[in-house]
Length: 334
Image 1 (tube, rainbow, N blue to C red):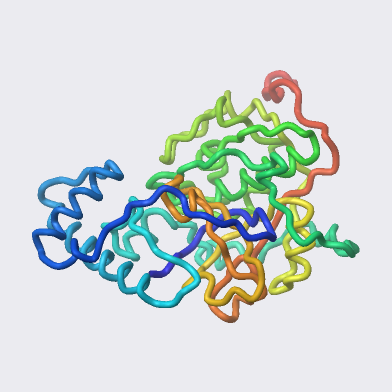
Image 2: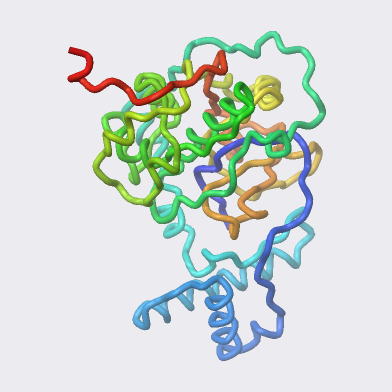
């Protein structure tokens, strides 16, 4: 089953073991239509998934296909196992359309190549540790869920800014994805997708971004609340792009701060020749390994596996200074 678009942040160079909470089933439950219906009802109850009566039969047919797919894959000698998460009665197309709507290629055609600062601050880094896990270093906020809104670009941007801010200030502050969805509407398209580099530019230009507490996430396109937007708490100096398909450069950055990027991934962990990257997503804890996935290192986008190798970026913050108080209104500036 293809895992597509919007993996968010490369957190680690090390291997993380163990699966999150999951829904298990037995081969015997696949034998008859009746037992499959019972399995479907048990799955819906476990994940608290509600479906209308009219939609239920269509959802069941999709679920049935996915159950057999999971069962057949798990019988093979693969370095990973599949489970039935809360998306198990959705097709790949439905899932990508609903949850992975970053539309990176579309936006890239309209906006051109990533800009960045045109520099690479980690170019002269010589020593890279064998493992770095930014969760253990306190630079990663808790798991978030973007809901049915194609705002993964905003979540990706925010996690990168949260991470570099914690590294510079030693304070972990949860920032507002909804501000980007609502207010960065001249460059990006809210729930219809966007680009991280444009969002970084927006945060720099606006003088910072506010907290999630001040501007909560609603999983919908709404009118920009200027009164909330004008209370930035974390600023950045810009952003850089990791040189494309350069695994050494990617490792240098990951050793110094979390990396963000969109990704197209199929058949993760085909080989285990290297410890994988640990990647966080924004689809809640029921996806992957409690919202994380282990992604194979040492591959390029040419292999069709890792868009992070081609379009990864990270925010730059040179000091621990952050905005203090609200931005002046146009009236105050007169």
